[in-house]
Image (cartoon, rainbow, N blue to C red):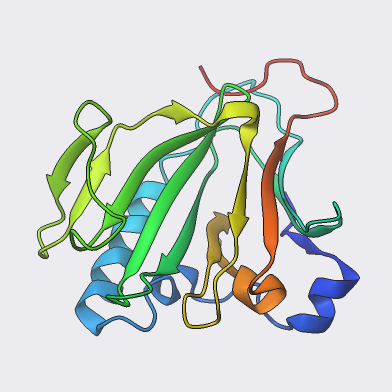
Length: 202
């Protein structure tokens, strides 16, 4: 599986994003202990994907701008996981929504929220809230398919730093959407494989 591809617009705005320390940089600019802890947590979590035999790949996750141009395209293998991270606009800590390509769908699996700040919190009946052991919490077992396998996002400023994080071929990757499209509306869209076959792990 190759790394993600960027449009000409994206390449002009970003250079050298691939093969960066994504799992630690997902936490910038928050303090060091949370960077180290989340790096270890994500390394373990990402490694749990793509285990099924005989599943068919060929799907992709795309980030589209307001006119439908593809800014970023990430090839997906069965069971592959990725996260959307950003820095809370008031508290400045990193927030993470984490997804999986499961049975042909984009599924929201879990969310990390280091505090009960404005706009954050756990809705009873929607996943299980557990401590992260560092003063924050994970909402685990959300397991909600995203309607239409797509959602729109108003990309935040560079200080907010909306970013995609994933692993591929043993490398950690990070793409800052705020470097590509700050203040703009983008759509994150899952595209199934052209040959649907068996869509994913079961």
